[in-house]
Amino acid sequence: MASPSKRREMDMMKLMMSDYKVDTINDDLQMFYVTFHGPTDSLYQGGVWKIKVELPEAYPYKSPSVGFVNKIYHPNVDESSGAVCLDVINQTWSPMFDLINVFESFLPQLLLYPNPSDPFNGEAASLLMRDRAAYELKVKEYCDKYAQPEKENSSDDDDDDDDDSMSENGSDSDDDDANEIVGKADP
Image (cartoon, rainbow, N blue to C red; front, side):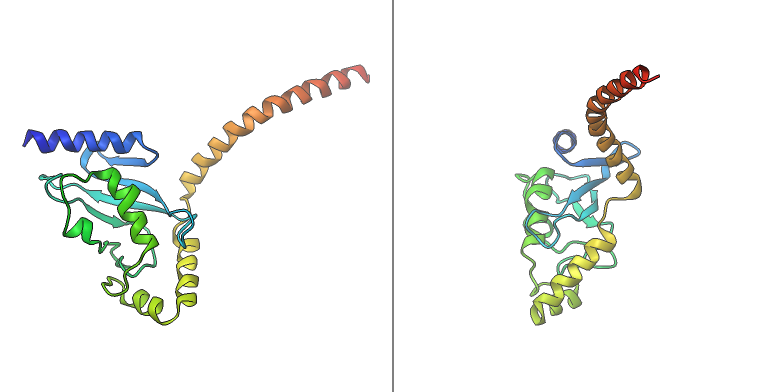
């Protein structure tokens, strides 16, 4: 059992050191959330999802459970539960895979290449096969409505922007200093 535990810790560290935001629940390494951005050049680009990950005791010998917390319109994701229908996670998982594979390969591939013939969301699968343009519009609608950064995340992002602004403000402050000197010279 020590081996799966060490592997869980190692995979979590790799994920935390990557570009993904990881929120643990009570410092538990068995259930946590990962912030996942829609793949570039896809219908989901610009969307941000919170993914719930549960690692079984036997991880990496048993696959993680992965689900979308916020809604996503996709044939292979259950709209109400967020459960993912993905063979590589659910059926063909191997200890060779790790959590980075889930977020850098498996989920992006799922979003880029939906499989309407094995649906979790029958409506999305049907619409994709019947009317691709309407399907794409609905995906974008869901992205705009449900997959935007949370307000608290936006404020964090705003803080980052403020950091950028601060460096820009550094030059602005030079301008302000110049304005102060000009202001002092006027009276």
